[in-house]
Image (tube, rainbow, N blue to C red):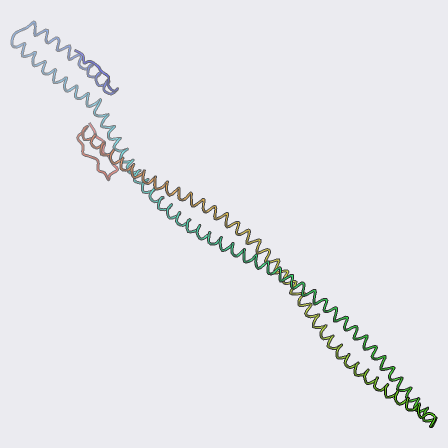
Amino acid sequence: MLIASEHHSPESETALAAIQANNLPLLTIMNEAVTLYEKKSDLNSILVIQGALLIILMLSTVAVLVLIRRQVISPLSSFASTLAESSVTMRGLSSTVASAANTIADQASSQAAAVEESSASLTELTSMTQQNAEHTSNANAEMQNTKKITEHAYTTMQEMNRAMEDILAASQETQKIIKTIDEIAFQTNLLSLNAAVEAARAGEAGAGFAVVADEVRSLAQRSADSAKSTSQLIENIVKRIENGSSLVKKTTETFEEVAAGSGKVAVLLTEITHANNEQSIGISQISSGIHLIDEATQQNSAISEEAASSATEMHSESQKLNAIVSQLLQVVGGTQAIAPTTHDTKRLTF
């Protein structure tokens, strides 16, 4: 009688086919023994037949066990051992990944803190740069005003210098006039002396004329003295005007240098203001970039923490899988459970 086949796995179907193939000769012998038993009913024949049947049954049982062990248990044990090794390897990898993920998460957190501090420092630097730019702009405006005032003072000093030169020229003309008056007084004095001499020669008839000549001579002398005093006074004024003109000229030159220096300072302040504005724009762009980096770092930190959590969970699941595989190995071959800390799994042999 053949064993009926049902829906089994390929390994089971192969094992059943092998069992059926090996049982055909045994069943044939059993049928022949039954036939012989029917023909011969003596006691010896019955004993022989029963012994033969018992031997055949034992051989069939042994054959079935060997086939089951060879076709089912051995592949299942090999598969369980391989699965155990994979479980241990996955557990080790998950532990390594979890450790690496935790390390990356810690580094990402530290990096995020450092980036946040850098962003705060850069923000403060941006504020200081903007404040310096405002102060430089105000200083530039004040320097522009100072430059205008200096230029106006320089123009005024030039006008004053020209006025002093005009006064000096007028004083020189006045000196010429005084000199002419002095010469006229000198000539008048000579004429009065000549008139006095002629009046003395005329005697009494020239007495009145002598008096007039004397008054004219006295007036000429007074005019000469006044002209001399006026000339000395004008000379002193001219000297003072010359000294004042020299001082005005030096002051004008100084104002000219101050105006030139103010212009250079104004140009430098303008360039500094422009540079500060560009620096402020550049720092603002850097601050925006660091803000984006900070956001990306925060996201990476969150992702790293999630990866660490997932790796830890995977490690836990691998431990559960390892326990299940250990139980399967115990069921199949009666082996002990796999140690949770080892990465080596012994393969069962049959």
